[in-house]
Length: 255
Image (cartoon, one colour):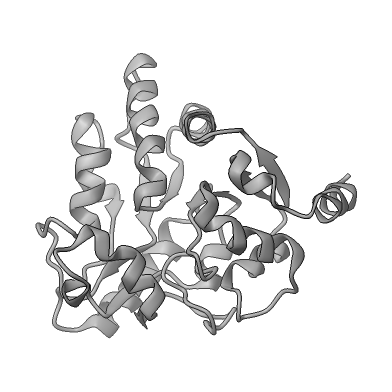
């Protein structure tokens, strides 16, 4: 696990976008694992620009999103289908609709949807690069504290802290769905490479626990210590509160 301080939101987002661009150029049929939320908006803004400037064809690129709210249809303003379309997919015509995978949270049989999604991951994967954010409670995807390290795509109950954090996207916290379909921790770990992006003081405690704490299901992100190729991208606000001895220990372990 490498910890990279890229100073601020702009530089950190540009780095992640550039890594995705490099992957697409190197392998035009790459499988990309995508995330949503405020952390990723600038990543997609820069990626759109880089795609256009490099005249890339995207028809062979396959994408998998981490999660979707249960109960929201794809056209809902707060759905992650809508988020991905608005932030990325509508801006370049060569994205192939049949290669874009986002869980459906409005289906009658959620269990079947989860099984199908996991099978799609196995059939199309492995994911070449999986990008992640991190929740204030250490969740990745919607894998809340206590999630099994063996978990695969499934319906999850959202914690009160996650619902509160996401309530800014809804009219009130009462409108936030209480469940989501989420790619599991074991599913995420199948990716060849993982890039976790964390910015801002409100994420500092979660990243500190990730760097300094033990590997435990109480901190879902801690499973990333068991992956051979993880970059944790942070800004100054986070890096300045990290235990630098721990950061150096990780670097020495990898050297």
